[in-house]
Length: 149
Image: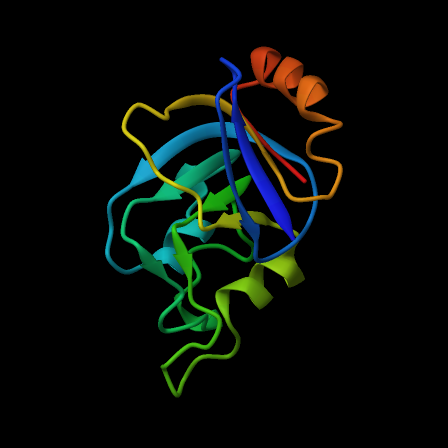
């Protein structure tokens, strides 16, 4: 399903949703870690933030409940370049996409990551992304960032 990350200045980045399909709002931040994506998603310090992972392949080893930093994801959204559908770890309980679907987090994949894409934003993943772009752009001005569907 189509997804968009719309920043407060109107700049938008297109991609594909790989989890829940709900509008979300948060501050767009970056993380340069090569591993630990589940720990990042469940870390309370990322509460209400849309995390953009700069490492290109996220989801390689899947999700295990034992590594969670809190009982549920804390992020408002999660943006990656390449989301891996099938984890390679024998201990994985599910894929990252399945985890985000079960927990209601809106992620976006195949998003072209560019320098300077920081600030308030709206991630979207529904077929209504173009129709709601203006509404979400207005929301992004009032609130730190958002993902629309």
